[in-house]
Image (cartoon, rainbow, N blue to C red):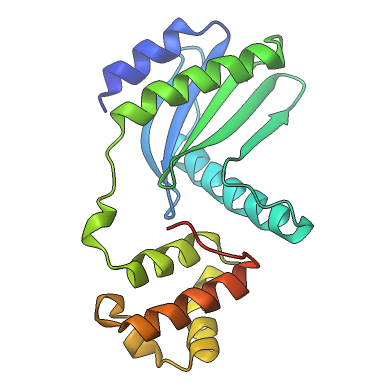
Length: 192
């Protein structure tokens, strides 16, 4: 995706101050456009946006309101911030003037995400085994992702060293891994 495309898309939307694309799960700035009138550290803000999406997902899970499609809206006296996932590997964060109607913000974000989804690179999940995809999903959505491998190891009986090589897990080990992931996330099944 070119910076020129993001700049063009941002300038076409009335009242838009900035667009930031955050790469997940690392919460790193992938691309950004900021209107000339504004100045802030895009990489720092993109990191916060990624963390906010992760925290929101954990909060929804705690409430029993798990959703594959999620959007976060923040309103302040001078701005509206709206965040939305683009597939599982990117978050689009848009900053609007506060006088832009929320319905228009949602509409513009929906159109922007549809365009960006076509332009952003796709992760080749076909090269990964099912076990690798399950572990990636867990690292993205599990509470306390830094401890997820230990939790999975305890639930499956598989040593952490074995889990570090997911492409070598047997079908039975993968089934146990997937069941542990469902238990940890409180889901009946995983769509990975």
